[in-house]
Length: 329
Image (cartoon, rainbow, N blue to C red):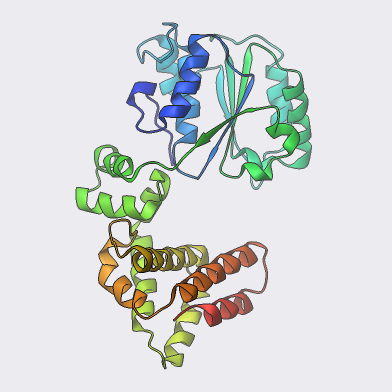
């Protein structure tokens, strides 16, 4: 998801992280390295870029003015002292870190601070992580590093301990709805459905709005609706559908997981307001009435286990067969 550049006052949500960063600018007490972490698609990179923008704003306040030459250059992604370092292929490699270290030996070219943002910092390979650690151990007042990640547990503890950690929580459903409607022109009712299914991630909501994903969701849930107690042939067809290489297996498992999550919520609370699949309330209600809480929890654990095994490249067919056996279908 593309990061939006604006000023802090225009960002919806994340009041606590914004407050921490503005206070640091106001009192000129910035950390030499930050770790922005939290679920994917909630705006970590957006806030990292806007923090860099505010740091270099020529007005000298705790927020970007959006008018000075520094802010304009940042908006156009051509500020010489603000850069993003991303993975080439699977990893962020040592050459990228060494190149950054060379640039950090010099003063910023135009701005007050040189800001380097490591996108998906958990993808640093071992050599790159070790090289970065040296930079973190010998901080320079003219340079600020921002590590952005959805998976902080993948980073070495030696790196984590040298960064000021700022956690980003999921966005409120109302904020996701507003963002979808006002910034991405999604129709209001559809925006509400997507927000409910997003788990607080605007990035995921946009991904869910893909026509291919919506079609896939309906296919998965229609399969579930068509399975009865004695429909072994239908289960076999569903298993083949899940393992089809032409579709994204992880998307299918995510749809399954959110369906069982909705079933669990409805069964335990009797309320439909918090369901992700608001357009399938009747199906969820019927399903919840025929399964125990234990059945549903077993199904969710089976889906989680299958996902982990597939990530580890275990046998796909066997993994999905074991999962299907444990699902309460």
